[in-house]
Image (cartoon, rainbow, N blue to C red; front, side):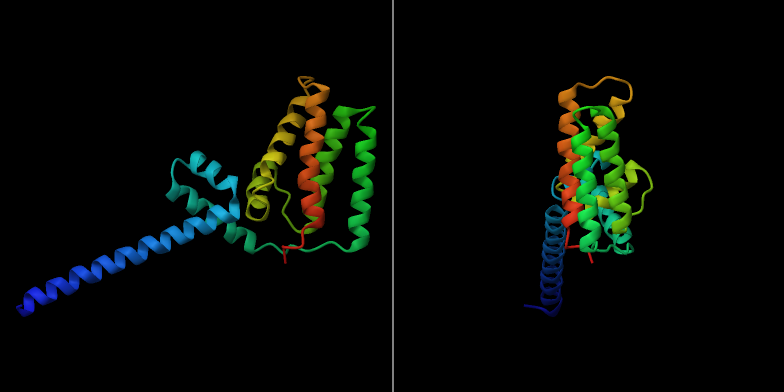
Length: 180
C-alpha cells in the first residue's frame, strides 16, 4: 500500500471516528435534556419547530437558572405556607373563583421567596421548567382556569381541578430539597 493510500485510509477513519463521537455526544446531551425537562422537552421541540432550536432554548433556560440563588425555606416558613394553603382550600367551598386566584398568588409568592424571579407567567414557566418540568402541565392547566375564571367561563369542577393542579406545584416547591 502506498503512502498516499495509507494517509487517505487514516483520514477517512479519523473522520468516521470523529463523526461517531460527535453523534454519541449529541445523543448523550439530548438524553440528559429529555431526562431533566421531562414532558417539557417535547413541548419545547414542538413550540420551537425542531430539536436543535428546542435544545438551544432549554440550554439557555439552564444557564439563566444557574444564576438564581434558590434557597430552601426554613421549617417555620414552610409551616406558614402550608397553613396558608389550608386556608385557601377551606375558602374554596364558599368562594371557588377567589380561592383559585389566592392559590395562584400563594404559588407566586412561594416561588419568589424560594428565589425564582416573578416576571410574569410565561417567564415563570420557563424558569420553573429546569427543576420542575414534570409539574409544569399542572401549573399551565391551573393558570388557564384562573385566567378564564375572571370572565365567568369556568365550572366549579374546573376550578376544583385548578386547585389540585396548583397544589401539585405548591407542594413540590414547598418541599423541594434539590435546589441549592
